[in-house]
Length: 108
Image 1: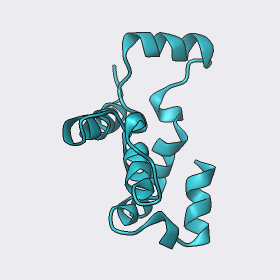
Image 2: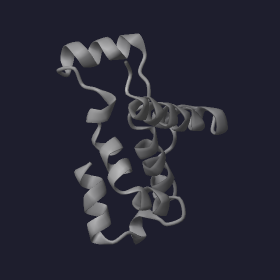
Image 3: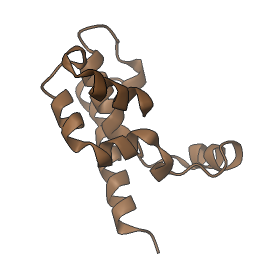
């Protein structure tokens, strides 16, 4: 019995993880990071947290990271507890966030 909420969160995260490949032609980690792209790459990273993993990655997580699960991802927790912050990143630069908002992101 898979948790439907966890499955839905992973499905949405998988779509967000595929977005850069579909629209920029490369994976999220391969995108050029500079002061102009930081906010969008950060937003996509948060949205993609908890994505479904490959079998090799799942094995690594289980053996080397103590059974790390998608719901253990700190960015997934940030996404669930502060959806307005993630939405704000779609229209506001990370540089314009309040110090408290920046700390929430850094804590994740």
